[in-house]
Image (cartoon, rainbow, N blue to C red; front, side):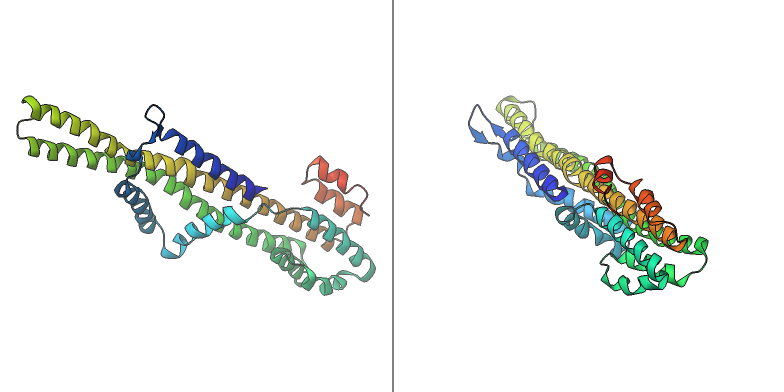
Length: 274
């Protein structure tokens, strides 16, 4: 549903913007909102600032982040509980070495890593530190990408304001130079009309900056945080389950520890799990 919510949000936001750009008295679209120079200044300036602020390798997460919010769903937890209970049964019957044959059947890479580390380390404390270090590094990578979009959300309005100031400077100096006497007769009227018309175009860059900041960059940073939080919670469940397996805890206790991470609806679903 996360992908659907993202697409739905994009559609609703786009429709609202388009409807707001229509002059209903004249019955026509206000083309002053379309300014390719302002668009290039805001997006190009924002991207240039990101290139200055971050290493080139990290800038790639801008494109990965866009793709991720459109294609990824928050990870679930049901399969973790089922698999942990199954592995607990196997460990009771065959010991921890019996789990080794099950590792290749698991698709989750962090789960595979955790089970492999469980078989390698004898000390539970060292095992926990190894798993938490990998989780911490994963969280840092995700946070760095979220930070990129957060900074883009702050850069875009600044470049929008810059474009507005530039537009006003160009507009006023050009108008004064063209009219010669800005306060005389028809020339003054022409200059006033040109100023009002040009001011509207100059303000479009601020509109672009605010729009991209609040409708694109900040929401993407928020959605990436949601996806990261779900993955972190899943991996914390894996750590808890693997430690319980290492300590040879009862299967029922393993299940109850993992159910503490989920909501009541999921708990009810697993009440019959043995």
